[in-house]
Image (cartoon, rainbow, N blue to C red; front, side, top):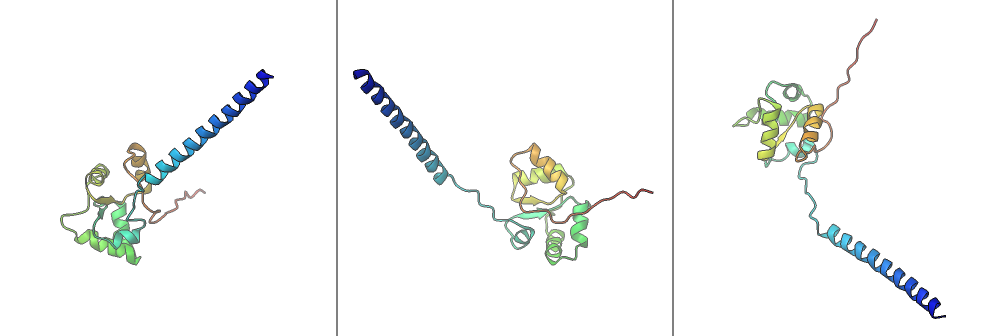
Length: 144
């Protein structure tokens, strides 16, 4: 009889200990979740970038992205081109590496081809892509 009570007490204490651990874990995670500051992203699209003046933006001088903005008929991209073309000192960079360094060391958004963007984001976790792609092009090969 005493053995039965001891087993019941052990079982009851085990359940309460398990419940206490679960509740403690839940409240600790909830407290951590509620106190972590969220990263505020002031720019979420090309329109947001064009409408602000706090963050400079540019491309590689003479590159395909620069040509894209230069020849674009879309109003937002024309405004962005006018900004980049008139900005002094220049917002254009000579290389991808210079653009990445400028992003990491100042308030600068570097506009570049999506494949290069993806490659450099995988190399450096401090880099991120904001918004989607500005333009997409399909390529094909003609065969006889």
